[in-house]
Image (tube, rainbow, N blue to C red; front, side):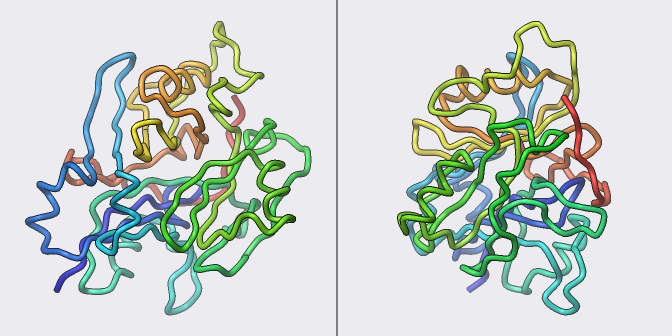
Length: 266
């Protein structure tokens, strides 16, 4: 039976890593399965596109979350949504995808990365420049059962040390947008730094929300959307500016950007 996937692809500019959720059903049924997932466009408090996944669906056998980084054939970075589409098995259909994560000039992740239980890059708690190091940063991760969490990096470091977290997939990015229902302390309401931004939140209604702003916004505005409008007590910035990309055919989104190294400030 065909497996239908809605994917969040994680990378710096377009696609080097990806999150996907697979549904064991036919593609026609997937398009109407709005209780489990949906993509929409919104126009308040600013214009944005959002794809949501119900957490209970991820705990079932119908759906799974996955991360993509390199092609299984040649270990080359996937770089585009089209490359991901071509790399998927024939029995899987891509429903949505979003870029995220921070990468170096060799398309290698600079933050904590786990794929199918294998740690590819250790947790990065160093100080530095750029958005990744606008501390606190954080990690979006989930266990083999599909329980998704967004955790501030130092807090996750403690959980890993104590053996209380067993990520099956994980991607580290930064900065955190919302930490335990508080907006990142370095974000200012009067900021004038406007950029297209994308991020993810784990929300009170039991959903995981993936948002791409369709107009330039400040970090504070973007974080406020997750905290106040979507009721997500923890949310993580994935990337921004020319690095933001979304694939969501149900709302006619298919960015053609190519992945590369990028670390936006502000």
